[in-house]
Amino acid sequence: MEKEELRVIPADIHNHSVLSPDGCDLPMEMAERACGLGIKHFALTDHIETEKFNGWDYAGAVEKSYGVFLEIQERFRGRMEVYYGVELGQPLFDLPLAEKLLAEHDYDFVLGSTHRTRTYPYLNEIPDSEEDRRRCLDEYFEEELRLAEWGRFCSLSHLTFPLRFISGDVGGHEVDMSRYDAIIDKILETIIRNGIAMEVNSSGIRKGLHVPMPAAEYVKRYFDKGGRMVTVGSDAHRVSDVGADIPQVIELLKDVGISEICVFRKKQPIFIPI
Ligand SMILES: [Zn+2]
Ligand SMILES: [Zn+2]
Image 1 (cartoon, rainbow, N blue to C red):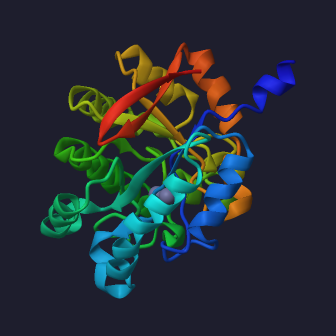
Image 2: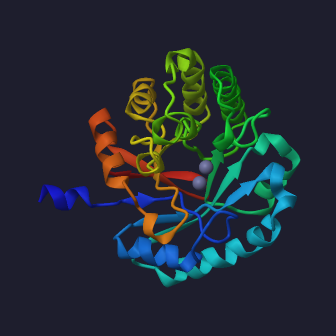
């Protein structure tokens, strides 16, 4: 019985298809997998990286994404709730573009993300010196704070994202995270004040960090500050990763004391008991 409960995946609202430059599978295939796993709330959140908008056919993908959403919604009606989503990366790097995209598309769910900093365009290629790593993380959390202050999105993605490349199996470096306690507190207070959810992204578990992004201590800190809006996502870029490790994230949330997760329809939160 206990094992059965652990397999329940109430929602996965962070997924990428071939409408992202790094996605592997068709949108409908991703949705079929989600429904097959018994997921009740699903969103594709294909990337828009604002500063690279002209470097890949984002415009074409964005154009297609609404029709794709409608098709998926129709196919799974009555079995799985489907939301029109997007992952907006670095909106502050091209604010007019970000504002235009948000004005032109009536998204249900917008993830706000930082995948690079001003100095380090590729977090997976952070130069191998302690000083660089520190500078990169300093910049990253400052960027996250600015993003939270801007606030025109529903959920803040993968708060501890650069750790995936710096520590764990990939980078293997120890990071003294106490250096970021104050700014992370500020980020958490800002999203709570602005009515933005915190995402707990399960991809850290399978990508060598062995914990979600962010890890339990930050989820607890968010909860202790009064935060009650949490979204969950696998950040799958292929069919086989849809829903991956979300049951583990749900257990973590319950351990922290969180009893509901949320999804978004027309950018309004809907709470789901876990
Ligand atoms: Zn992301
Ligand atoms: Zn993503």
